[in-house]
Length: 117
Image (cartoon, rainbow, N blue to C red; front, side, top):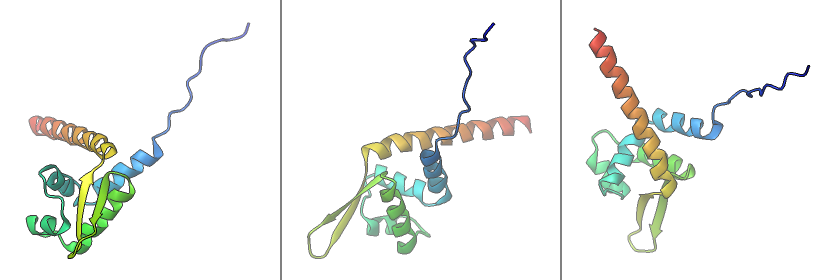
């Protein structure tokens, strides 16, 4: 008699998206940058002026990383002086929703741990 049971194949972590989440959470400024963009601050100079401790060098690295992932879009205007703005892409909005859910999960975990103490 042949066993006709279905077998479930091993589930692997989604490689690219997992790496993106790890990289974004690894950058301590990414979430702050997303918050700035959501509040309408989309120019790098304004971002640096809005947050204590954020340097131009670190901000540029963060913006470049997020642009490479497709979370942000860089718009350079052909003006003098040069003007650059960043926007959250449609993909970025989906990705940020996932980050928001992870933040909610962390709050629930922290609240439960506090109740047990």
